[in-house]
Structure formats: C-alpha cells, structure tokens
Length: 271
Image (cartoon, rainbow, N blue to C red; front, side):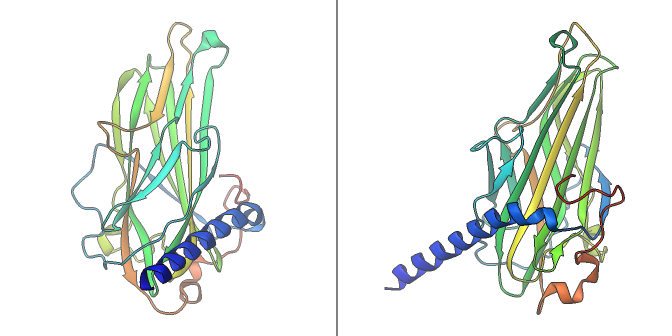
C-alpha cells in the first residue's frame, strides 16, 4: 500500500509540474523583471571551487518536463539532468549548431533556445546557482569571423520573476578547437549576499535562454560554433547551492520581486 501511495504522489507531483510549466508559457508575457545583471564567461575550467562546498543536502528534487522553443532545441533535442547529490544539473543539447558562410548567402546565423524547467523545491529550502560551465566547438577561419554566446537564466514563481543573470562570451578568429568556458563564483564563495536565488520551497520554474551568433566574412570558408558535449561530458553545467529558509522567500527578498523592465525596455519574452 505504501508503494502505491508513493507512486500516486510522485505521479501527481509530475503532473502538477507539467501543468505549471505549460501554463507559464501562456502567462509569462504579462510578467516583468526586477532587473538584469551581467557576468562574463572566462576561458578554461576555472578553479576547483564551485561555490557549493558548504551546501545543505536536500532530499529528492522532482523536475518536470522542460518546455522549450527555438531553432537550437527542437522538440526532443534537449534534456535536463540533476546530479545524484542535487548539487548541479546539466543541460544537454543535440542540435545546437550555428554556422555561417558568405557563399551560401548567409553571413550571420543565430541559434536560440528558450527553456522553462519546472522544479519542486523541498520545503524550507531554496537554491542558488553558484557557477556555470559551457562546452562546445568553435571554428572561425580568419580574424574577421567571430561568434558570441549569450546565456541567461532566472527563477520564476510566486511573487513574479527573479532578476535575470546574463552570461556572455565573445569568440574571435582565427581558431578551431573544442572550448570550455566558465564563470567566476557567482555567489562569491558565499560572500556575495545577492546571488540569483529561488523562492523558498514549493513550485518554481527556472528559465534558461541561450543564444549563439556566428558571423563570417570569408567567402571560401565556413564559420561554425556549437554548444555540444566534449568526450561525453555535458554541454552546460549549472552548480547549485542549497540554503535553509523559512516562510516565503518573496516576502523577505524584495530584490527578487516582480516589477519594472530591464534597461532596454524589453519584456520577459525578449531576452
């Protein structure tokens, strides 16, 4: 009987998360943002610190089926997987490739993916993203070829949208190689009091947006950039720190409430 009840409970949680994600696809255009913050990726894997070395250890964290749109993540080509310890999650893309060649008539190619990931937060727990790593391949034939990655994430849930975190990196040619880029510790190793933080417990949705732009001016060669796996590793890894909390985070984190638009006057549907 206990197994049956547990199965029904898990099924209901998954159904609720899926319904929440689908409903937000229609509701989100009416939301507004608290603000934007910007960080740059750096080359290499960074240090060993991930910013979650002193994290609380949550129990089970149900994740619903991501809802996605964009030419960089057609249906069935993107997956989200949490690590067994729930201290990181990986986003895996199968077809995130941007390429440009003058002879083909396209000097610029832009690939995008806008994903909503429904998450059931444990009671009295909230998550913050402490570091982000991206991996892929870059091929820029000359100094006039270039590529740009823009990765954005923010939490959505009761109380509106959290601040958007924008992560950027510019690739310059010539060059052809696998790449690994990473952020500094986004929470300052625990010293930063204002990391991007989820609500306290309950249902939330993490939005992750990626845009990869490639520009080529060489009529004899193709410029290309991808977000894909290297040696079987994940495309994008987000490290997570869990903190104990009480009540509703919306009531004690005014910086994360809804309100206003970003500095460019754009609504939430336009990164």
